[in-house]
Length: 329
Ligand code: AQP
Image (cartoon, rainbow, N blue to C red):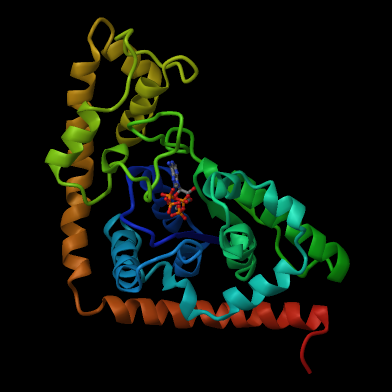
């Protein structure tokens, strides 16, 4: 049995970067033989930056509904909210005591999110340790994520190996990250050198899974490209069109070479128009399912039940770790 774990922060509406980098994998893995998947809405991570409490509650339910709308089936996978399982925070503390501040200050996400700020919350620095706890609590083998999480997965592995060498080699299972080719890093539409992000100010920098066709069209048609005008994949020199080609490829399964051949001699306008169509038709069935799930009475019950199942697994790991560390009576 292979155990899979991943999560998404309820910091806003899930965008196509989250979907093509991570959620597509969640569904793929759920249907693999001999796999047990846990998919979490990581609300404790969301509060590393200030959140409006009412909005946060809504976003938790939005993300959980989107999980199910993209195809995660709570009968096959455990779908739950991080804060409903206290062991995440408890193991997070234990691992904080095993991590070095130097390695946390080196995390590129911390550098990016703290850049230019006089002071940031300590949670922003220790976020990757809580993420390690999320994963290690469930004796996870595989973590499907986008490329931006590579460094955090490495830290998780380092912490597991460090603890195992001090407290016994079977304290933690050392997990592997799983990354996709086409969707691994979807960049912002207005700045193809920055990753697409839920919390970026410009709403046209991203396409959210719930965007209406008119917004999708506007965002794609005004996406930053270059002045050369030929549909050619070249991340270094043509990051804008290369990013759009990646999105096209991830939605359709067409390779970048096939797209170059198809659009040879045609301009960006044609390519963008087709990408609008591809995106709208990929997202509209998800939106239909989302509307039904988000308004259903059973949503909270599904998450509560998922929380109980996750809690039962997490408690056992936490007890094992506490025993190894000599904590408690
Ligand atoms: N641009 C991206 N391309 C591919 N994958 C991405 N992921 C995030 N952005 C991209 C992957 O989506 C999963 C969930 O991400 P998250 O919500 O936990 O946190 P994040 O990486 O910080 O995502 P955002 O959208 O940028 O949120 P904010 O703005 O709140 O920080 C992860 O597997 C991630 O790799």
